[in-house]
Image (cartoon, rainbow, N blue to C red; front, side, top):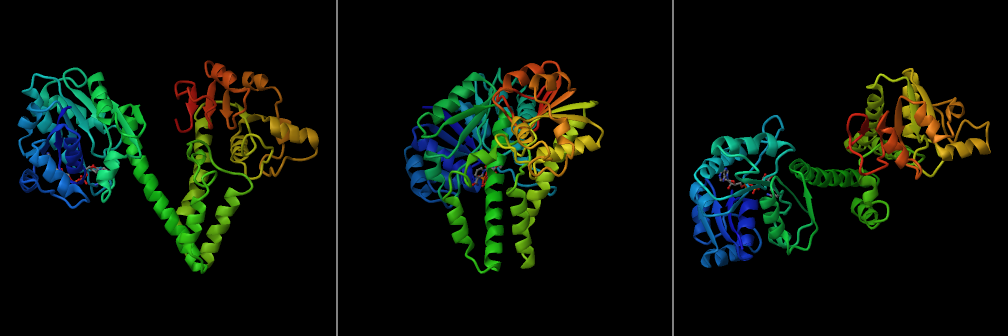
Length: 439
Ligand SMILES: NC(=O)c1ccc[n+]([C@@H]2O[C@H](COP(=O)([O-])OP(=O)(O)OC[C@H]3O[C@@H](n4cnc5c(N)ncnc54)[C@H](O)[C@@H]3O)[C@@H](O)[C@H]2O)c1
């Protein structure tokens, strides 16, 4: 069992502190708010949360949980700290780091006078880069010590939900953390060992980003459901029934397949149907800020790919894939065809490898393609040999993944510029010549 101090005994900190104490750890809760410290010290929960009163009363009575305003003593008498101070919005929308900086300064000063190793684990929600750019330098300056060598550092975001916080602690939906050093990683692994959830061990910045992604995702789902509900009601329909039925579809509607960052959506259904639903809403004066953003964001993603290609001073572009997805010759509203048209308009010499569209041209040489209305001379731009396409291009744009291309793209990325919109190989990361659109 570990000796742990928890800095900040608000909604997150007090639940963590009480649960850690219940699990047998010796926990010192630290706060600058004397009233909260006194309340907790007297065995009462400083916030309202289901089951917390009993948990605090039991753990304080057993001596496993104590409370103090003395940061020095808390650091001295524990081996690791969890930091759960608030990070409210600043007026410009940025994350307010006042409490984080102040607690890092107190912890740093306390570490200066401590000889044993101590891990500092941040649990507050902080934007990517804050650990490296703010927390670690602040603790280093205040302590005169080196992070990762003289003291440990971790970032372990909290995902519990108020009102079910104690249940969530025991049964989390997600565990992710990053650690700068082996001791802190081992400590976090041990703390989470018995929880029924996979542990995602990542770098500090990825852990920071996952937390914001989770909250933004939840927020977006709520706004989406509300927008659908508003459109439904305006059409005398029950929005809750509509969304309940949608959510029953785990194969498509709720599938993670559509949550993979990459290129724009297209095809014969999604663009036209989003437009049509938006039109339905407009006829009833229902605002659709989210559906508007869906279409705007999609167009912007095509522009992003275009900029990535044009940022290189190239003339010859080899596109792998032009249909709206792999496995079909359908070119209707294909964002890759749109990208090709934009590049051609900018003066790029574009050639295309797409076995499915090539087959369509073989079947019907006169056809301009299956719904292609943006690249009129597409058949003349088709290249049937992938190696020739790679060898004759200054930049390769990977739009669709075909089984035969992964080794060739790995090889090509050694010598020519590759812009990957789909990620043919999960092992490839952006570098000098290879750039993934979202990775
Ligand atoms: N509330 C939630 O449901 C929830 C869930 C997950 C993550 N988070 C994140 O966790 C963090 C904490 O949230 P919260 O809702 O518990 O905040 P809170 O405001 O309820 O509690 C923060 C506590 O930190 C204390 N504090 C401030 N400066 C301090 C210092 N220098 N030393 C010691 N204590 C100090 C405050 O007095 C307060 O008691 C935030 O970053 C929040 O975004 C919150």
